[in-house]
Length: 467
Image (cartoon, rainbow, N blue to C red; front, side):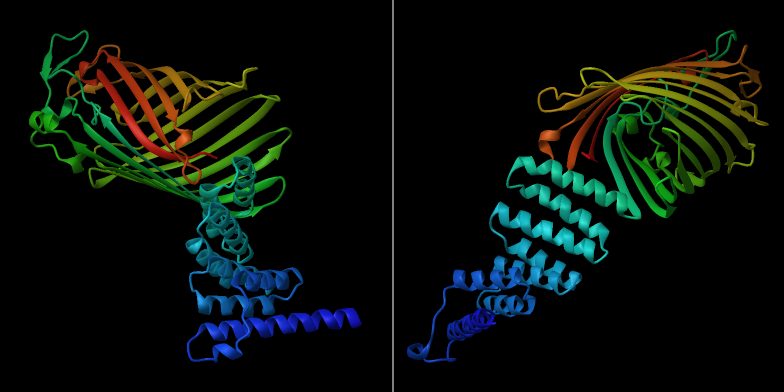
């Protein structure tokens, strides 16, 4: 009892001395000859000791005194944040941690403050802010070997958070924004007819800007299943080049604007070593600022784990498209897909995919069948300052009843397309877990109706999360 009483007494004396020193810092409060002075570092040590001994109120009082002397004292704000955490006041504590971060001068101080702000945000059930603060802490790592731990904490936080928000943006100069042809003439194999195409049916160059936003919220879940509400929005805007404006003077940027809004449900459940996914949704599209079509869809997918590093995914989807143009009838489409992926001994990843689709409609030009195959390859090791992945594929699309006005295309229209892309991620330029990306892609289409023979080369710049 004597020892504990002595400890309390010493703490009381220290508080008294600190109070005197803080009062002495303000002019007119005390005579300098009667002042007992205590150094600021010593005062901080006393406050930290109060936290360690479970006396948050005492630490709060001491740190508040330090702030009266210097409102920009980062360590004092940090002490207040820790004290409020012990007092179960996480939201006020998070604000104090944010002030500590703002006034911190060293990487270590900023890292500790952002980590504490993330913890207090989570305690205050502000998971979005917690994710933001974890990303901020990546900017001030005192040692690079801490990065995996912070990333793992972020992934765990993302799993326990009932909602997620993701965004993707890109800017892509392109030589063919409108999927136009290279020739002003239209030839149809098997018919002795030559048509003249409008200016805006030819390839128009310029800049394409895209944005994709996705919001997902978990409605229910357990260790074996999960149901989510999903909302997404995709937008495309273009800026025609001077050459495009000279070629098609009547064309406007807004003519090629595209928007798609979708709302749906997704249910995932474990089945053996794989996963079964059921989803359905309704979407609305606009093109050129005018209503374009409604889309209703439902799908099922099954993932099979074949070996430790390889897997197979099979999926099927039904779609019904309802065009807004009165002259177009609804389109019913079936889409079947298979994708196999495996990790090689080197760590590189290879993917093979095949897609088959069939669309039926009372509108003859909407009836079509398509087959697409592709291969993708991702290098595990960076090539210099970038990580690289590439893909290459081909597709065949048939329109068995295609017609241009009164002219029926003999044997139907056939389009053959080759496409490829190379993606670069500049991980050395990582900023808070976001990295710049560069994508170079090309596609070439050949058709027995020359209007649909197209070539496009584009280079897109974007930003994505690195984890």
